[in-house]
Length: 141
Image 1 (tube, rainbow, N blue to C red):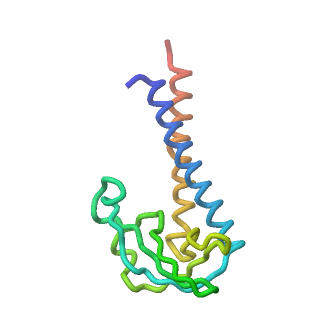
Image 2 (cartoon, rainbow, N blue to C red; image 1 turned 90 degrees about the horizontal axis):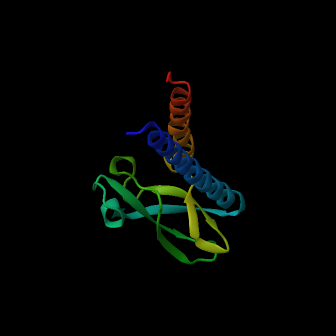
């Protein structure tokens, strides 16, 4: 592979993960700051292979909770997690947007911190791309 293509791929991957992680973190912070906290349960799972073509090991939790107004909300969370990290019937702290209760975040453990993982993991290919660029620029002719 040509060095320029490798550099561009590294930069693109890094920027994708940084932007994705930043947007998810920004949404989580906004909902947690302005939202209403309630207890919810893991009602069921949607297989990640139903949504994207991946292994059946990762699942999207389907969360059910009751708003302060008494409305039942059931929604599929938008981050997949391995099946051994979460169990059907498990109680979780949910924070939802009072203007749009279907806009919610799971305010517990790995579901919150995974946003930082996406953000930080974007810096690795970006740093690797900078390293490749420096090597390519200073390569002896």
